[in-house]
Amino acid sequence: MTQSVKSPEETKVGFIGTGVMGKSMAGHIQRAGYPLHVYTRTAAKAEALVKEGAVWHETPAALAEVCDVIITMVGYPKDVEEIYLGEHGLVAHAKPGSYLIDMTTSSPLLAARISEAAAARGLHALDAPVSGGDIGARDGRLSIMVGGAAEAFEAVRPIFEQMGTNIVLQGKPGAGQHTKMCNQIAIASGMLGVCEALAYAKTSGLDAENVLKSIATGAAGSWSLSNLGPRMIKGDYEPGFYVKHFIKDMGIALESAQAMGMKTPGLALAESLYQEISKNGMDEKGTQVLYTYYLQA
Image 1 (cartoon, one colour):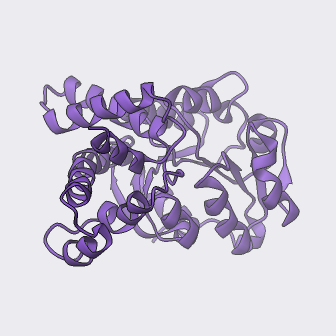
Image 2 (spheres, helix red, strand yellow; image 1 turned 30 degrees about the vertical axis):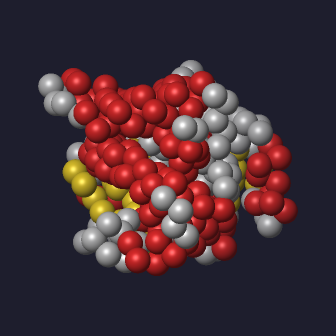
């Protein structure tokens, strides 16, 4: 069996991207005893981690030069490409033998390119997007979908276990991202049903919270219904997962499906509705804000 990386105290972990989810994920790693190194474009987002002992770096390259494992959780594929493959990126500056783990939801094709470039420099790359939102990140109960070599996966499993409880190696490089696309496709169409159901409840004069008691644990039950439904009812649209990032994810899924010659009408409809609320200034809200679309009539 492949041995894991060294003990927590001997393994320096770099974390790039400490936003809504990243800050919680990095915090779990830090509290597990791993020396934590951080970089994020907005330094203020890493202040809490730095106060707890994390080391701040001015650039991803500076972080890469001292870390054994580097995790990224950023916004868009273009950010991933720059951070990994740019002249001052991780692949060019990481120590040979280091593990590079991208947990951003990004392009499967890009994940494969990063893996190939990393291998050429003696690095181990994994694509490991997650599901579970801000709640899953906060509680350390994320679902982690991994693509890459089994040996690298087993080596860093102890670090994954600090952030998630459902950790599955899905296959070769890019397989983690393809799995995340399956996840986002299921959520996209499911969110339409959740929003429509609760809007129907409100419009028909029912007590929506009471309706949830009946339907959330039945055949209609879902994570979105149980966790985002109550937020919709209360008018709480603060982000656990941003609208702008969900639109990005759906775009990747649509492109991937098109490249495979596959029809995804549910995904296409959901993406079009989210684009509509985006035009109304909702990019920085949580995905549950789609509920408001159904209340406009």
